Amino acid sequence: MTDLTLTSGFVQASENGAVLHLTLDRADKLNAMTASMYQDLTRAVNHLAERDDLHVLLLTGNGRAWCAGNDIGDFLNADPASRDSGKLSPAMVLVHALMALDKPVVIGVQGNATGIGTTLLLHADLVVAADDARFQTAFINLGLVPEAGSSLLLPALIGRQNANRLLLAGDTLTAEEAERCGLVAYRVTPDELEPTAQALAQRLAEKSPTAMAMTKQLLRQSDAAIKSQIEKESVLFAERMFSEDTRERFSKFLKGS
Image 1 (spheres, helix red, strand yellow):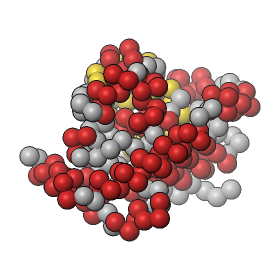
Image 2 (image 1 turned 135 degrees about the vertical axis):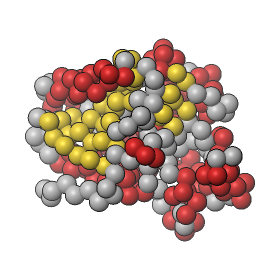
Image 3 (image 1 turned 45 degrees about the vertical axis):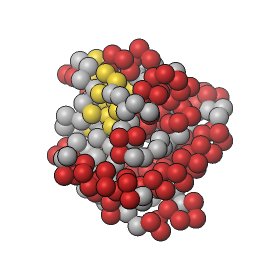
Image 4 (image 1 turned 30 degrees about the vertical axis):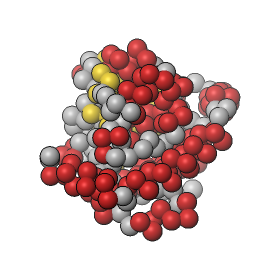
């Protein structure tokens, strides 16, 4: 087992008992994710999987947002060849790592949860949201399609109409709406978010790791279907990401128009 080495400069890792706590630390950009941040998170998830003394993953974000989605500049600068031959993006490699993890994943959400900031929650086991959290996939607004298996998982989790609000209408769900439709498990005040998420992670860490792993395996009955959907989404996502229409939308977004 190797030591955990993070290189992006925007992901912080700490251990609290049997909990591995990862913090997105790019607050000035609302924790928008770059390729190197996804790679750091994947390294950390794989590291956790190898550690018998760590039982839970806790993910949080510094600042006023959990995660404002993928860095649009990264999208604009992406090499089309990076998606050739069905190669998964760094974001989807992270999703696959989370899907394979037999240890519980807790995510604490405040402020913006946009794009991958929302779809990543579909691969957590328990989500704690602050009252100020806002959930928006935003793909349709940028000329993109769903990713991370969200076109399959969201309708199953929150119902077809709520999923269509996010994926077709580009609506934003409040924390109250997200709790009501089952996107999040707990809703607390902003001041309560960090201690509540930490306490939940510690509570899970005290349970039997073997029983936890077995329970997660029993709950994961549709992994093959989800992976197949992710592959389908990834092909269409890349097609849209490199289209002239979508790249114009990216440019307008970065210019604030």
